[in-house]
Length: 283
Length: 296
Image: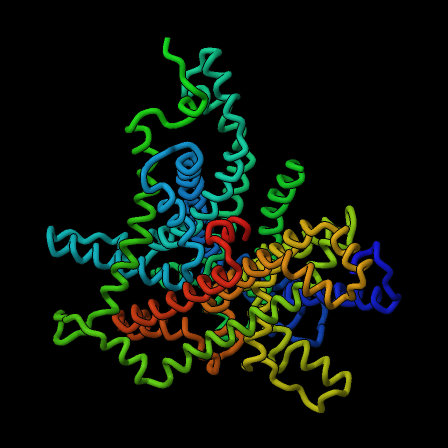
């Protein structure tokens, strides 16, 4: 139980053993991915055949990550999509936060409940419903005016829309949580000292929200970069990284996938660092 | 000079301001959530009678009932997701207990962050790790041979147990975090009091800890179940051809066969299942949806 209660030595060792096993379970898959990114063999499997950087820089007829054009392009695609999703989610999320915390209107409780709904809708269903609706819209525009709207067909704009549809819920919650604890008298003071609404927003409210905005941006970027379910349903001819990796993993194994995974781990660790430091700064 | 109260100053002052603030939310909620789901419902309730001619029909749902493969897959997905949720809870609870109640100071925060790290990494990467560990030529089968447990490498991928391991692993975080925060808010003196009054480990757990941690347990379980039932990557990669996961059926109908009506019906059934479980969890524990989501 807890340290203040008497515990037998056996119970203490069992607890410690369990915790160690738990963290081994958590980190084992990541450890093997890392190790086999450097194994000098054409297949990511034991035994260990010596250290190599071939799977990053190429060599001995191997195509390394930095020469694998389709893989690099898919990383660029993911970054592009994530940038759009982040910008949209943080902007709309901020507006939503003000709506939830400051505005009073009829139907507010329904709107705030609906804002949480995307979090309980499976990603696959978000994907197919947006696909079907966009296709209906495109059909309607085509039938009515003879205009072909390409952005409503499977492709990156729909991927952005699909990911945005639920990531903005998370951004909204993050920003609203901080706005809730904002001391409104600070704004009153600024008004009394002659500031305009825009001044107050720029010099008082937004600086206060900044940590939440950065946090929401980091989370949005990461969730977009890693999204698979919704993206799979909406993707066109240029797949983002997760979809690309999935396709390669079905075809067979290559240590290049380990190399790109390691790259992803380092990148997400950097983003995580931003979030952890933010959390520490707050406490 | 008119005096305004603080509330009025802070609130959007004109109807125009309110509308401007409301506009993005409405575009998002109506354009990307409500209308697409109505479209999905309409699609699922129609059947093609001739090229480009459709009529209202329950045919898609009838196919689901008539075709054993479909509803078997559905029931199997639900059952395995419930099992995965239960396993996740059982595995996460002692770890969360250690972090919340036993570890102190710096160790506590380091362990908590260590729990988060694997989940900052894409699910694709985590699944790749499990494939390297478990495939016939992989790390685990080799280890078993080296230890003399099996004479030849065994294929550890493509079993139901593999899918379960993958599902438990991939949603562990969403159980650990709500559990830790629920357990942290439990006052140690309550446990000490229960002990002094003659409670043993089991009765304290059942009468003090679990009732207190119930909101966290429910929040974690709901999220884990939803993630499992809606998962596509883990069952297809770790389960291979035998995975029979319902999201695969949706993908096949929608993308491979281009039978959107059938796919929409399947999508709605999955949505129904996931909503029903969320509702059940909330009702059983007497909690409100908004509170649970904010906690998770």
